[in-house]
Image (tube, rainbow, N blue to C red; front, side, top):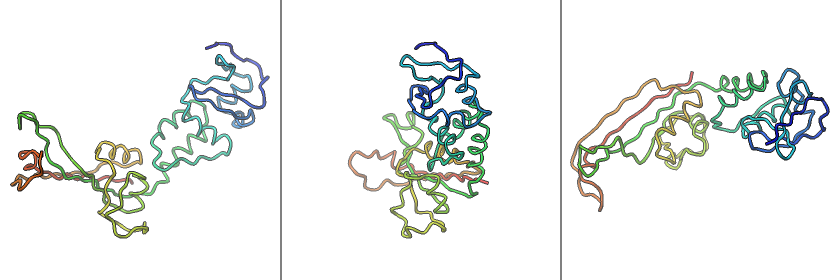
Length: 237
């Protein structure tokens, strides 16, 4: 990569950018639309800006998130996708570019989210190894259950939410305990809730030991005997 730097205001009206390996083409007017920003300083010659080996202006920042920076520079507003999971990273990028209005917009999106409660639960069995209890593993689950206000559950879990067991499709201002997730990764569900501003305020669990009954071929008798149910309550204020 060339370390050749530009130190004058002699920039073309159309700018080719390399932002962390992701390429963009935009206008000089867009990049200099916020006069107090670092981008304004870079593309008016107040600060030097590097070029890569092909002559594109190079910014050593997150190239994927820069698309939202450009959207803000063009329109003065920002619209993030549903279940956007990188608001903290985008806020950090906005702070680096000294785009204070963008920082406020990202933070404001979090504040505008409605309060609510979502309960996540799962039924499962303890998973045993060949040596029985000596080789017991943490858990084995097949379905994560979701309870709460329909619109809120849809907003948090998006396309990962399975509504096939819920009989009242289409009505969002109601509550249900029939949703479940399309995946069985409890940590992924927790991550999505935390990223949407929820905090876990309570949890409970229970376990049972009983007869296994008739089992399908290949099912471990001891493993099937020990079942448990766990539930976690998340709140966004």
